[in-house]
Image 1 (tube, protein in one colour):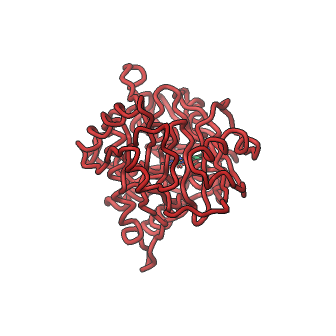
Image 2 (cartoon, rainbow, N blue to C red; image 1 turned 90 degrees about the vertical axis):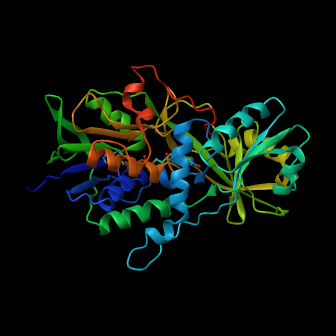
Image 3 (cartoon, rainbow, N blue to C red; image 1 turned 135 degrees about the horizontal axis):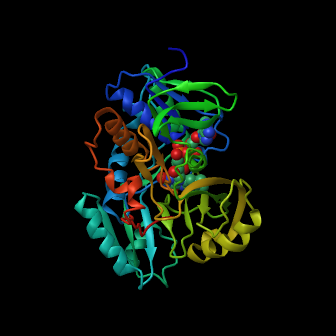
Length: 388
Ligand SMILES: Cc1cc2nc3c(=O)[nH]c(=O)nc-3n(C[C@H](O)[C@H](O)[C@H](O)COP(=O)(O)OP(=O)(O)OC[C@H]3O[C@@H](n4cnc5c(N)ncnc54)[C@H](O)[C@@H]3O)c2cc1C
């Protein structure tokens, strides 16, 4: 039948594309259509991400998701090669480093114990040990830090393109149109209606529309506690280069920074009103971030801001974590959004998990039920202590 599929995915960013790829790679033989309204991904969150990949989470589920995903990223160039061409993603395993004051350190020690349960090689470092990693660091106010050498950062756009290329190669169809509505009849999903009025039928629709997903779900009568939340990233250069490449480093204030090529980038989870706002302000860097950066690393005193950008978190206001799986409100409706700033480091595991759930009706590799939709009504929230 024309205009019909077995699975429709709304949103062809890293999450939707990972789900499509995993389904097909796992042997799914049905027809998959991905609707993506922005062919150049200008406003999608994926290309605007800072690309940080860390296992330093504080809940069982997030640690498992990140560990699986990190391992997938380590072999991504080869496993996602198409026609012999490697899918390069520039994954730099330079570590992740949470800097801690005296007061913060006991909490990080507790987190480390949980991380090690899953095989994450995280280490609690003393103040002086921090200098082995970042020799220029100002440590007077620091008691130490939590470090994981395996972690790092990558190029999010290349990851997304890797998934898209492989999904297409395996038979997924990308249609560059705007989905206006997910359709249902008597609590059973029937497909989608596009902005131009055309309808496509499918018994399964997966909402992966990122920061736009909650609006689509709301139109279906199934609102979820997720809002679009603007986040800024700034790129700057310094006169005096650092001795070593930086891990993605998080200051006790929450300001984070890392190398981007030979330059640096920095960001911060500032208080913002929710909304679709893509403006970034040089003055924000100069007034808010620069003083923190310059105090932490003297080389940053002479920083020249070069550019910036803003992107959206699909921010889960209830517990700041992804919402994954079947929605109990409509048969055939699946969700994968609410990543709250950690979707890049979960994309491979989420793709695998949703593939299992859609194909077999249950999770096999990692049990993703802690992130189910029902947790909000059951008051079984997943409280993550390390959201950046
Ligand atoms: C500034 C910033 C820094 C970040 N840093 C990190 C980080 O360091 N590490 C990390 O793990 N994560 C980070 N993230 C989060 C990460 O980028 C996201 O969690 C991830 O990219 C989400 O992918 P997605 O596919 O769900 O969303 P998106 O990439 O936004 O994809 C959703 C797609 O859906 C499409 N769409 C929306 N509505 C419709 C519709 N109605 N019809 C058709 N198509 C539609 C959109 O055009 C979009 O392309 C960051 C995000 C931002 C903004």
